[in-house]
Every structure is written in C-alpha cells, then in structure tokens.
Image (cartoon, rainbow, N blue to C red; front, side, top):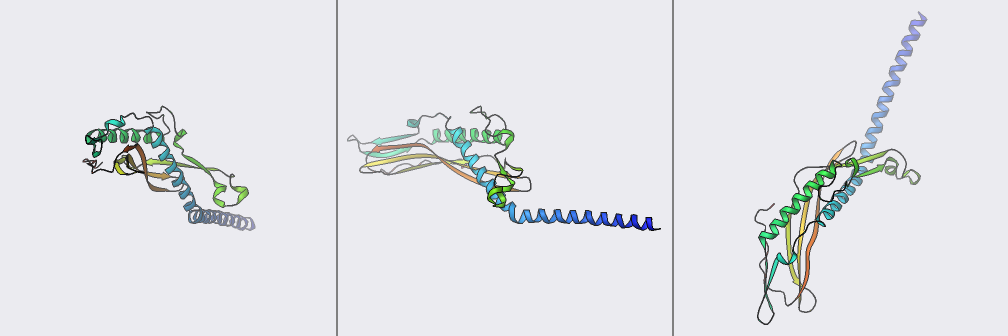
Length: 227
C-alpha cells in the first residue's frame, strides 16, 4: 500500500515539475518577445536596409550607359542656354534595365546564390547578419556571447523605382544638371521568432554635370509607365 502511494506521489511530483518547466519556458519566451524581440527586429531591419542598399549600389556600378545621350542642351548662337531636353525613351530603357537587374540580384542574395551581374555571392546561405544573443542583454561582457541569431530577408514584390531629374543654379552663371535613379524595395525581415516588413528607398546619381549658363526653362522628364 505504501509503495502504491509512493509511486503516485512521485508521478504527481514529476507532472508538477514538467508543468513548472513548461510554464517557466513560456514566461521566458514571453519576456523575450516583450523585451528582446523589438530590439532584435530593430537591428534586423537596420542591417537588412544596409544589405539592400549595398546590393543596389554594387549592381548599378556595373550598368553601362551613355550619359551624353540622356539629355540635350539647346543654346543660342551666342552660347546661352535656352532649354534642356531629357530623352524619355532612353531614360525609361535605363530605368527598366536597372530595376530588372536589381530585382534579379536581390532574389539571388536572399537565397544565397551567385549574383547574375557581379558573379559574387553577397550573403552565404542568404544570411544577412548574425546577432549574438548576449548583445540584446545590454550587458557589456555578454555583448559577443551566446548563440548567433540569424537575420534573413524575403522579397515581397518586384523592385520599383523612378527617374528623377533636377536643374538648378550652381555658383555664378552655372547650372547643375542632375539625373538620379530612385529605387524602392519592399522586403520581409525574418528572424527565428518573428517577421516584419521593411520598405527601403535608395537614390543613386546617374548624371551630375555642371554647365556654363543661366538656369533655363527645360522640358522635364516624365515616366509614363509609372513603374
């Protein structure tokens, strides 16, 4: 009889211990989600943004285009500027080519594959960054300790963008002509416990040229597709 009671007592004790372990683990996970996960997501978003911007700039550096063919400066017989005309067709061609190239590169980077343009692997296994768990504790001697939490990204849709043109006075009797590519990327930031969305915007100068003459009335570039 005593042996039966002893077995029941041990069984109940084991069940209570298991329940306590489960509850304790639940409290730890809840505390992590409330305190550390927001910090982790902030760090993950920051480094995902860095990664996207770096890839965009790296890929665009390999795209070839003739800057002189993108716009035309009209002058009088005396050399004064009358207008600046932007070639919408060529600018649109450059825009679509750049966006398609960037899109393919980001898709390759998220999967840890070789970039189709540079032939390099930007991020092994698609891991953008690794955060030591101790870093989230804000305790100095634990900053680089603990398991590494991996940060990944996943593209949510195609890369979008636009061409931006600008003409303004620069110094005395000079005009600065600037053509930029604005790239917008929507991505999902992934850690081992949660995901969040991130929108990045990168502006890359394609042409920056100083010409002699007053700021003219010019025909602005327009992107009829609105991509």
